[in-house]
View 1 (spheres, rainbow, N blue to C red):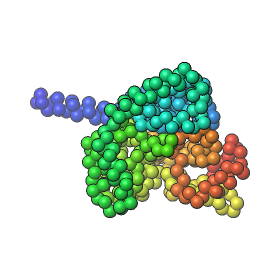
View 2 (cartoon, one colour):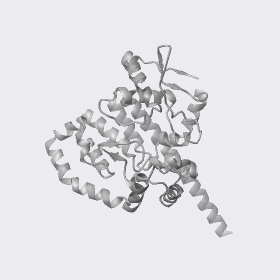
View 3 (spheres, helix red, strand yellow):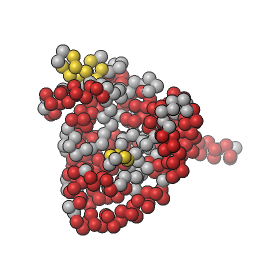
View 4 (cartoon, rainbow, N blue to C red):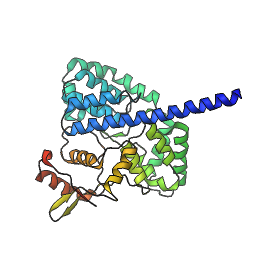
Length: 319
């Protein structure tokens, strides 16, 4: 009786803890989305407030959000906080090529702080090397080199094994996807997901990662849309009768928005706003999820953006 009681109590606490974690992640995504929409409106101080609010809900924020927060702090001349952000990013796998971007020139002009940062730089790199699992990273890189082999079932089995062993492969385990001076919103193994999603059911692992706050809902939704879920992540640009439309929604827009809301995603209209901003009005190179499925349509999108002032845009869609 006593053993059964404690087992049931443990199970109850475990379930409550999981529910609380999932709710925390959802709140985190709510505030980071608000921050991104504030960036789109050039309201960087409001964006910082939203990012600060999001930090109450995840112990370790995602690097993409710290990157955008850092840019906001640079633009607001909050240089102490901006250097804190850069240190976090270096310990997650970015490097000094961050400073090749024009927006980071303001930090280089802070002579004393920049000199201190550069003296600490080798320590920050060493901290990153200590934290990551280099064996896992090496094996993932091997799979990435052979990613064109669509039938490599060993790859999907290995992904499943790593997701089980590590509760997904988060940024703390393998670092961020940082290449050629750019921090990607997609994990470094994303191509493996695209090529091998159909070979094994990764959905439970991805859902758990989402609930733990390891995976952005935009990325989760895009991967699930490979299986036919309709989260509206396949954005296209159409030109019909000289009018530009950002997307042809698959299914009813309200239904899609309800599905998006359930996993912590912004609405389709909000995503449209961020997508157009990222492709046409992003001089400081903030990093958002802003995928356009038909790359050939980018000419129409640019035409649309040039034709109408950004603040006066009406985002159109047709069913």
